[in-house]
Length: 275
DNA sequence: GATAATGTTGGTCG
DNA sequence: ACGACCAACATTAT
Image (cartoon, rainbow, N blue to C red; front, side, top):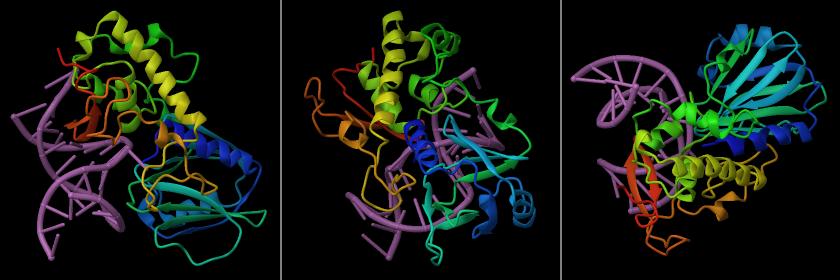
């Protein structure tokens, strides 16, 4: 579910909620396989009494810098964090609860159980993921270097976290629409001006997502909600994603939906022609 | 009631 | 190097 803008919103709200500096007093694990590299016993023993020194985002990962360890969380499809202070029975999808030393606790919910928590000694896990698209390092030249030698189709490339980190299904479709590029076009067939348009589109689409505090699609609980339980506003700004059959905002042609790389893919057959 | 689809990623097997 | 397919799961929509 959450892509770069949603994860960024979550991390920002964690800072607004002043989680930094708090100590982890107790852990309850409701679903053991949330823990990617530890037994529940080892995890609880290791994390207990560590302080949350910092929280940041890298790609779609949330990175908690603790006193002695690094806790890296990937929310995958339905992972969510909530901050609570009232002791209640666990929600049916609650997988982990972290009690903090100010009376609050972090509740981690994950309906589909795909999310993973890694408790590690370093951030080495993050080294293999690609460039941050909203950082100064993401220049047009850097983007061109990544595209060099690529023969695959552009959408699967955008979804591959080893190149540009944080782009998922929603923002990939939105960026390709903004750049007027058909998602099945081959990377090596893109023209100079198309690459530049796509570069700009990736940045603007992600920035808009962050400014609108993320995209929340349906109303169900499986949807994206930030730490405070707020929904995002970016769903109203989407041009193509889950808008098949509706008119393209640019030319009014009906948006089409196809499957590409096993993912639902939305585009305008008129604005985004496949040569 | 069965089947497909869901915002993710990692693996296998051609 | 790539794509096709499956796997991990629960829920909602068709």
